[in-house]
Amino acid sequence: MIKRSDKSGQVTIFIIIAVVIVVVGLLAFFVYPRIQTETGFDSENPSVFIQNCMEKEIENNVETISLQGGSLEPEFYYMYDNSKIEYLCYTNKDYLTCVVQQPMLKQHIESEIKNSIVNSEKLCFEKLMQNYIEQGENPQIIDGMTYVKLLPNKIEVTFDKILTLAKEGSQRYENFKVVVDNNLYELVGIVNSIVEWETVYGDADTSSYMTYYPNLKVEKKKQDDGTTVYILTERDSENKFQFASRSMAWPSGYGVTNA
Image (cartoon, rainbow, N blue to C red; front, side, top):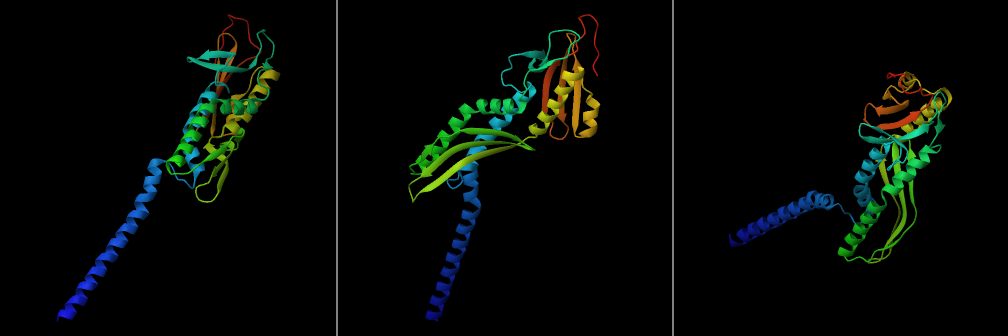
């Protein structure tokens, strides 16, 4: 009887140990990934950290640039709804068509986005390095160029840096990319088309663009001084791009109507 009781007790102990192991395993499986998510840092995925750190800043700056005609700080602009909207085509003469002010609009916007994130880029990579240092690593980083590309359906920012870790062997990470969902690429193409019509005819038919692009809303706001404010809005995402043009303007006092 005593031996049978000992065996029963041993079995009970083994069962308890097995349950504890399973519980610990489940906690490790479900809790550890959540801790990584909450801290925002996974030592094996520094690119994810940079994406999370930079994404919102890029989105905000792209929105500001888009609402101001392609520039973060417009220099030659029209005030509309308390916002500075850059002239992309302009003439100060009446009855004459306008002259393009930003002939390389896509490249200009890419440069504006790049310049707008310089401080955030520095801060995010400093935070990345500090996270590795706190884990006992000895991170080294080699700086390189930053590239911004407007691509179909997305904006891609590449930081051409090389990060090396030397605590356990040698790990190397390079070409950090941040991708933002935004079809500014297509909007810029349509804006260039409208500007071309402004340079030739002094006006553009907004309805034709909405026919070719059903997801697009194009508004044309005529102003008293001969300026036209164009507002392009994607119906699904509500992303906007707006700019000003002054072309084939009538002398002051003739009056205008929105088309």
